[in-house]
Length: 75
Image (cartoon, rainbow, N blue to C red; front, side, top):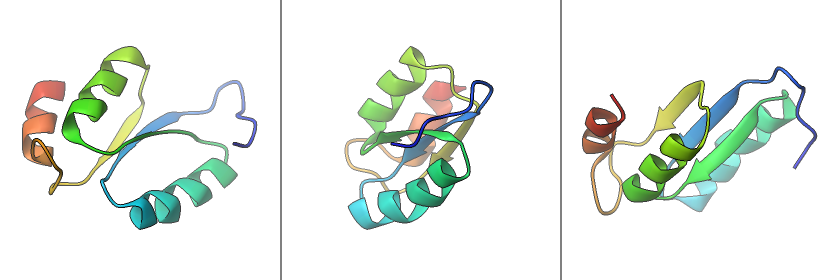
């Protein structure tokens, strides 16, 4: 993982597909963002609670709970 800038924003990327995770995470990290990845709604909620997240990129169709359910709990 590239070194992050001290004031870089943290993005929580939530998607169950590895190809989408790689497609989105690589350019964001290259541009200096800190990217935290989650593969399902439950993991997303845990990471959201544990980290200081600036932005969430959330897939709607996730295993265990939908992206809509995750969003309601995050709010």
